[in-house]
Image (tube, rainbow, N blue to C red; front, top):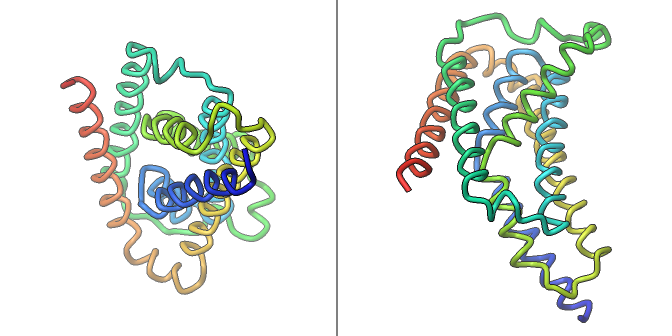
Length: 216
């Protein structure tokens, strides 16, 4: 296979992946919520959790493990569990009360963040992405489109590395947008409304997943 074909496959994958990142999804609202409530460091930790979960699905697709996609019972179970988790997060956001922002982790407080809190924020990001069935569908689809049977493993690994880095850098970019000085003023004023809107969107997404899964 020529370099041109490798490049063509990469462009297809990278473009589709970038468009998917531009579309606000569950992970986007998790980052917005954590960053607005707890500050930049929390958002970055959550971004690592999201990127790590995406890496799990990327590696599954990379090594050609079709268990999740091909086993209908397992795949349906993941969808239902994911929808229930999204409903849980959505209802928490809908019930959230207004609070003072950016006071939990500021300056030296960032260094005092306990391992328990780090794991909590990492876990929220990881679970939001790993329990989102759209991620598994997307990565398996992308790899099936862009990779041929004779594509070298090294080239496939580069594709996987690109997608992991793209997710991580994009999510961190969102964190910085949310936590810069001008944005902070807006977030302090509208954060609670953003939380409730985000919660409503999560509930709608979860409901759609449940209807499509149990109705099919």
